[in-house]
Image (cartoon, rainbow, N blue to C red; front, side, top):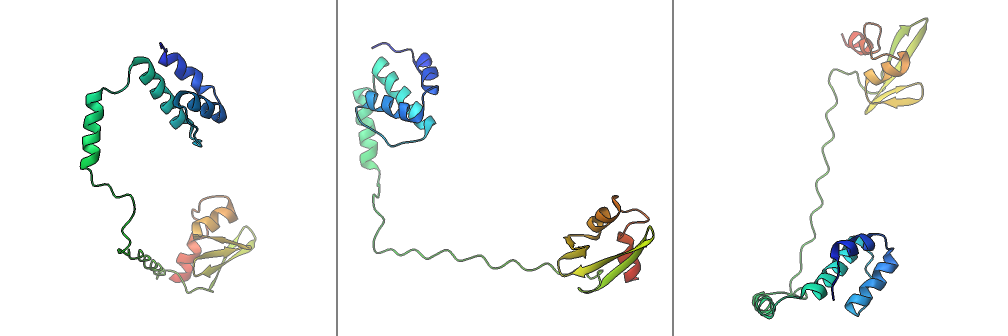
Length: 162
């Protein structure tokens, strides 16, 4: 049986999973429920090559059998051994509050272009106009459209804390 393995590999790539299963059944004379395309293609190609060019030699089969007999393979877990459940990791410590910030609940106010911007300090972030931001820089970007600078809200915290 002469098979061009490279041509067959290209043809197998075009097949659907059910078609690959059917092809597998034809070359192995047994069915499979495998749905992994790469596995099916490799197995089919290996079998076609083995049928075309010859399988393992009898010497190689005997050596494989010897190695398998020497291996202490355990098919079932021991019944007397009870494995401890993995301990759940300790909860991560909460980051310490930045001592440069005022306590949560403080309202920071800053005039900006004729209106007063108010930001509330939260335990985790800053509230501004119904949204929560992770930093004063993020609030300044949302309020002014820029990243801070001399008119940014970042100054509010600095001025408020001094």
